[in-house]
Length: 288
Image (cartoon, rainbow, N blue to C red; front, side, top):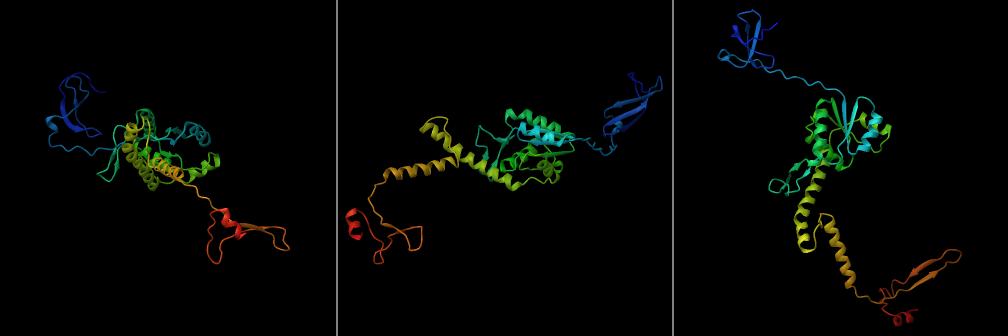
């Protein structure tokens, strides 16, 4: 029993509690029961607190993160009890929209942020991941899915030692069971490939799109692929428009060898060892 009355502590002893915080223990001078006060006093000077004991967080269950809510429901049915399946609903981090968000002077380092509409999702995933024994990142198996898995690891602050990367080619019970029986680490080569693609998109689009808005019309976009593809289409169309049609003739014969039912087409290729020029009918007729 401890005395809760505010009195001076008799026989005070400066010490520390289990987490290393300074406290004073003693007895009540009136009733003789134990007294306990928190806080540092002059008597604590020179005392060395015990090393702080890191409390191990109690973890239970396994968290699985997929991309779509529909996939989450199906996978959750196959995995059963002990698994919590949540959806990231696509990417959870991206480059800032208000700026280039790529440090071109520092090895093109990207600057990411969690969009406002994804913050509740990341907050929920972070909360569940904090108490889960293992976290399975089951996003798509392409480079975008690999990048989403890495962004989830970073944004939700998931410890890498508890993270498992799983991929499956089909949403069937056997495919999912096989995937979860052989998890792997995140493939950073795929992640970096996606980051390179995203950074190039931003560098090209961020610089050219405003020119399109000014010179052509608003809400147009430029990109590393579409802009080049459009250039190729335009150049080809200009070649077609500038083409000057020229008449030319070819000579061919349908031949049927003796003893065969099928025929073959023979095309005139050489006359006296030289490729013939057949620009009009007047030249072709004498050859025939």
